[in-house]
Length: 471
Image 1 (spheres, rainbow, N blue to C red):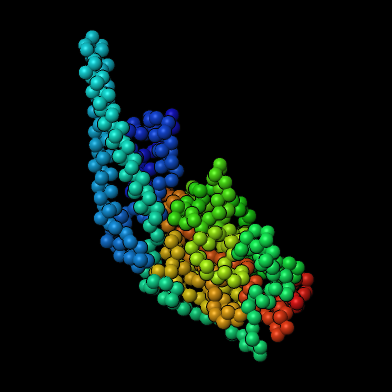
Image 2 (image 1 turned 90 degrees about the vertical axis):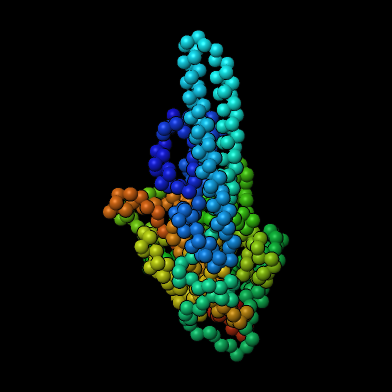
């Protein structure tokens, strides 16, 4: 029978609880279903993503911070659930102890030749009460898990207040916006003559898919290769190749499940596998349930992958062209760092994404997302927005986020602090370095000429066999 160190479990998941009837001492001694429930608990399937101490001691702070996101957190409901949980847990423990005492009394009475039927009836009655208490405790647990899994990350104090992208704060700009002596076209009109085929994409799959042909397909591949080479040889990232299908545990660990299931493409039920919405998911899960040696930090990964998104919440936005596709290519950069290093790592990672835009001489701006526009798992996010002449505006090409210990808590991604010898939660960060499709769009629109041809940026020409113009 497998033994479990309860002290370590309680340290890892102090907000949650273990049904007392599942345990005797440190050993599992329950029915198979109960043992399965406990194994899921130990594996972290009920783990939340915020520091549980905040809910025990700083509920007002939690509510205040979540209000910045316009997230409706009800501390009274949480406190009510927690109070019910404590009461029923105590009751369950008392019933368990009473049933154990009665069971021992049966053995003593049998040895004395006494009538044990009243004791048997009492044990049966206690068993029924205990089963009802366990059912109630399980129901409370399910409600608490549903509540906690839906709570977003606490924002960094530097994140400005605001409700939408209109309230984001511009931090800097780089590059000169190109001027044309003709009306610049957008990528859809440009691409129609040089190998960008949306009708064929729709024929093969559905709307929001595209086929790239000839030099245009090669140009996207060249962009991806430039990104990978830059991040590996200049920025110190280790290239990795990962599955493009992941299980639910992986998506739950990084925060896509359960909240954003509608945005995912589920590929199969047995086993339950999903197409990745971003390489962030499989790459960050490399460190799930891992204790990293301090000398190995920071871990820096770069990964090229396709991304698949249903765009369930898009509601008709960006239906023209390649801006918002169900399938697109991206180069993802991920860092796993010590907590004290994550703020500096966030700046570094963002600079690494910016370096690609500078190599391609694409004008862009860095935006600090406001509270209402910051993603569910992120504590702080910079968006890089590239200038698109065909639209006459800046559009997002990269999001660079610091999740702090939000993902790491559910992933149980830890590092061992040499000063204490104990494992502590790491901090996770990631960003697009860059989105390849949107970079292709930006190159097309910024490097177009009056005849609709596309000049190849100098940084890409070695990857294009010296080709200087498409069209």
